[in-house]
Image 1 (spheres, rainbow, N blue to C red):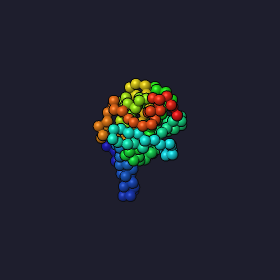
Image 2: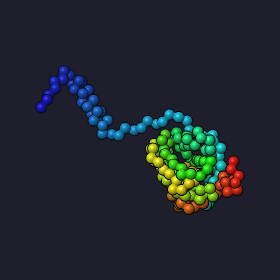
Image 3: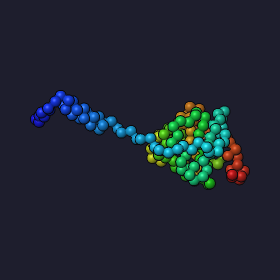
Length: 170
């Protein structure tokens, strides 16, 4: 057994506090610091429908817009989201690095049909991919589709989908 002689009560108190802090630091998982960067707020917008529900979504088309997506956003209104538009259909995979909000991704075919949905946790690098080639991915607040009983197979409406089916890609 080891004993320590402290010259003062103050020194003993400081050592005890330091030991407690060291133990507490190892017992608690360290929170990730918030990422530094600016959210994209000024992208063009379009309206989408899902049955009787309307969404006002930002449209990401350029490579930098697609890469940044909803990163750094701290909040998003319930009826907003971001539509990612790719040049051609393919298997699209998304992750949540630097994304602070829990989101649901809808992977969408050219005709607006939802191929699959994926709930995504904030600040993770897990891949969430389409189960078939798609041109569109719509990100909304997590739970938006579930709360409205919208599932894979449902069809979304909007000008962006009719332009593809009419071979008028803008």
